[in-house]
Image (cartoon, rainbow, N blue to C red):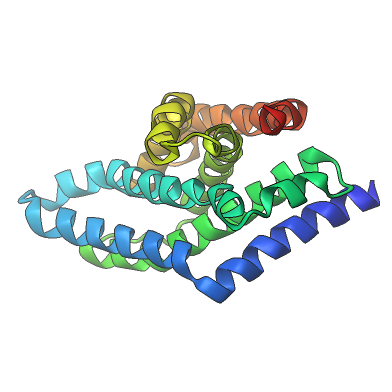
Length: 224
C-alpha cells in the first residue's frame, strides 16, 4: 500500500513539476477565468440582488470551462511528448496514474479558484470568505476532476480530443455542477447549511463513486 501511495505522489509531483516549468496550462486557465469575470461584470446590467442570485451559476460555469481547458492537457501532453507509453510501462498500478493525475488536476483547479475568488468578491460586491463555500469548491472540484481525468484518458487517443472531451464530460458532470451551484448559492445568499445539505450529500456520494469507477476501469481505458 505504501508503494501505491508513493507512485500516486510521484505521478502528481511529475505533473506539477512539468507545469511549473512551462506554466502554460494554469496561465491559460487563469486568463480564461479573468476574461469571463470581466465580460460578465461589465455586460450584465442588473441590480445587486440579481447579481448575487446568479453569482454561483457564473462562478461554476467559469470554473467548469476553465477546468476543461486543463483536463484537455492532462494526457494529451503525455501523448505529444511520447511519454505516455513509458508511463504505462512503469512498474506501478495503472490506477495510481489515474489518482496521481486527478490530484494534480485538482491542485491546478484549486489554484485557479483561489486566485480568482478575490476578483469575484470585488466585481460582484460580496463576501466569499465563507467556509461552507470553500467546502463546496473543494468537493465540486474533486468530483469534476475525478470524472474529467477518466474521460480525458478516454479522449486522449482521439484525433479531435479537444472537441470530444467536453461532449463526453458535461453530461457526466451535470449532477456535480447543479449540486455545486445550488450549494454555493445557499452559502452566498446566507441560507446556510440546511439548504445546502442535500446538494452536499450528492457531491459526497459522487465523489466516492467516480474514483471507484476510475480505480476499476482506468486500466481498461488506457489499454484501449
